[in-house]
Length: 124
Image (cartoon, rainbow, N blue to C red; front, side, top):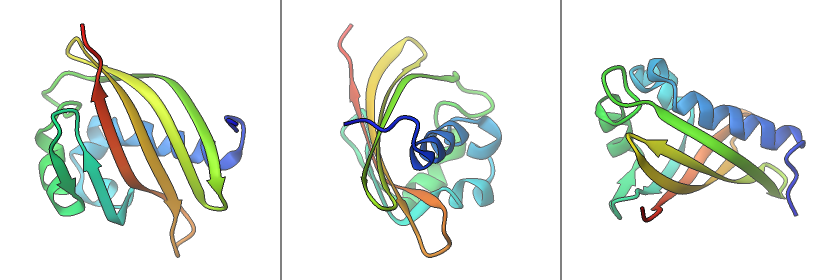
């Protein structure tokens, strides 16, 4: 069951949208605040990323100041447990479509942070 109007879902969607903002992608401090210390990603290429690898690469990846923008749509969210949100959405980046899934969990500081992200390419 989706809980798209739940405040935790709204907070997670806002976090995803901030991660798509070039200003955030170019700022280590702003980006770091959005990633859980145990963050892991499986990208659309199949590559596995750690938190440190993602933070180091983020300024040069798509969505940065010089790269193609990230167009994200169709957000849906479910509260799996207190402080744990599952989001799904779709992106188009430079004509490439992907379906995305992420888990956001609330840490000791009280904010939701991106714990896990996976992208799956959509065939043309």
